[in-house]
Length: 466
Image 1 (tube, rainbow, N blue to C red):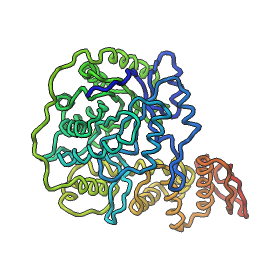
Image 2: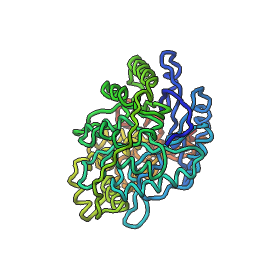
Image 3: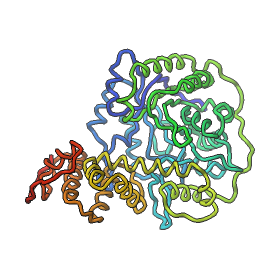
Image 4: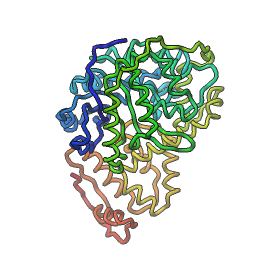
């Protein structure tokens, strides 16, 4: 499928703090890819765009692309209406020539029929029925967007299953079924190969290369015997070599984007990154120079007939968040060593969001009760409450849970009240008034030094958090 799309060049995903890299004269960046959900805040049941950050990103001189992280198309749970509307608004705001989303799912239905967040982008069912369901979801999302749409090739830590379509055949079936473009995430494909799935070269032989509009590259690391798509810093040299081989085969690629999470920015060697961006710019000049005129080869492997896309989604989603689930599919998936990895990654993401917002509360509990006690609290909370997409709503739920535990810790309620109010003031602006039995300034001062507060005078305090 050939689309009249502009050549944008080499770029990066926008993260807070990326400005210092964009200002580096030795690191020329042509395009910034924006993940719009990261620029929103959750207030009650509504998503609210952060106009200040959006204005800052809009003012950057580079062209913009929009890449969703909250409306993946690999599941059967319908997209939230407001998310889709804001996604389309972001495309218009940033004047993006095309948009993309993950060929994954992050929501599933519970036993009560109510959707829950799985806390991670999970792989869809790779059968003909799964491809058809994903194509329907992709077409539905694309129909609401003002620009052409592409699906991103996902990472899959599960072992290949008998009777499923190969990774390449599945992506080809979705892209042709939805008549959309492909965002070729080379790091995902390279991770899949390293983790025992289809080789990148076999994958490329099975997809329509003329549908590839964009390429992603990133860094990762080893964990529990897997190579994780962690976006954790500079790119492995082997990945750059792979890009050197692949990009010339792509006749319609219009951008190469480097992805990195905010936590990796402070520890990233800018000199190495500068060298890698220079390499990507060289690779960019080779695009479409070795195009092969051949049809994509799609495997004729029969699909699994005893599993539906809904069954797969609900079972894998439940296992990822540690819910009890029965049945032959659940029994089979439990034997896959990737399931504990999914569970651990979901656990780490959730705990990380809570600790980010409640750093002093977490430190008080760890200092006074020990790390195992804090981990046990997280385990209990995660077992009772499904994940939330936004850190603020995850932290709101944890605050309610923690207050209900009635832990005999004299300063806990005050520290939690202060941090909870501070989180919402930072998100929503204005001020909040809280009442405490101890001066939060004294509590925070001690905890900042890694000490348990002691002998803090007790009184009735009215604190204005601004």
